[in-house]
Image (cartoon, rainbow, N blue to C red):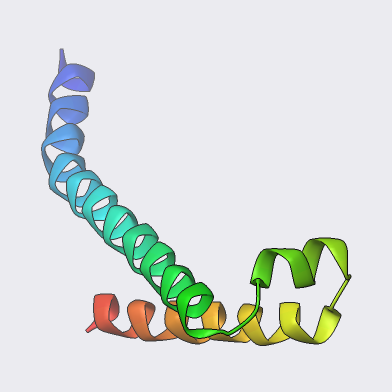
Length: 80
């Protein structure tokens, strides 16, 4: 009987954290998708073609750095 009450208390404390985590994951994914969309629209060339077909490693590194920079900003905003 005691183990059921401990499990119930754990679920009560876990549920708000789980919901918050899911919300922040969705917001982060939307932000990353928006950032990539802006990058592809701002550049005068096809980002997909340059990275996949032409094997442009420098462009892939630049886009990866933009995504990592966005991830750091989002993580700092979530952490407070």
